[in-house]
Image 1 (cartoon, rainbow, N blue to C red):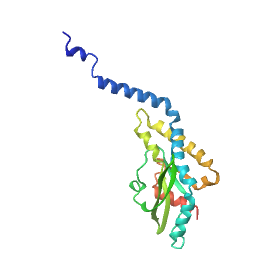
Image 2: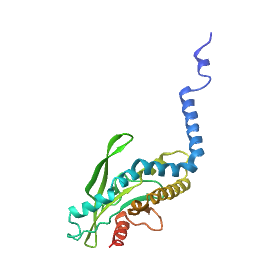
Image 3: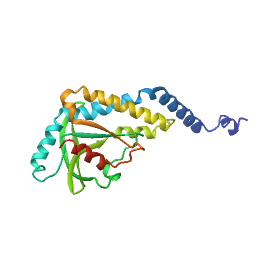
Image 4: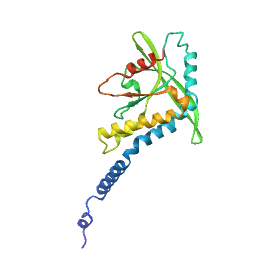
Amino acid sequence: MEGAGEVNVGGDIHGDNVQVGNRNVQIIIQGVKNHIGDVHAANYFYAHLEIIITHGLLNKIENYIEDKHLQERGIRMAKKLYIFVPKYGKCPRLISTVDPNMKKKDCIEFEADYAGAPRPYKNTVWEFEKNDQSYQVVAEYGTILNALTRMPTLEIEEIEKITRKFRSALQIFINNLGEAGQFVELVDINNPSEMRSESDILKEKIDDNF
């Protein structure tokens, strides 16, 4: 009589399927890893960055500076959007979690059509102080890069290479916007030889505009 022992000859079918699935995932990632940076850049640009730029983020920043009387109050704010690109792909959910000097001050928000439906977009205005000088800034991390830290088989050197490709491709997309892209600046961070905080880097960037 055929018993249960024969059913188990092949081992744990669910475990085998998981192992096969994991191998397939690894094969796919290894096959496309040379293009991940470009794909992430395109996704981040066309699903987010291009939309907020073409819907007048610069004008909204200018209006914010005027409406809040920042110049009269001696508060420095550049008419730019700064995007942090971490060397190893790891992005915080909020800038304030890695730099306590950064305080959420306000939000610039609007609605834009995306895939045929209205969708809200928000850009956080951050505030910080350095040497008794107050600053406000619109800045964010390229958080799409967080996916790299969750992909199996990718070594730290590969993640760094993908991040460089992401930055290069994203800069090309930004440059292609012409004049509108001039107020977007990519900011490298997490360079071991230059361990500065986000607020230190942004202070230097903003001061260059004054």
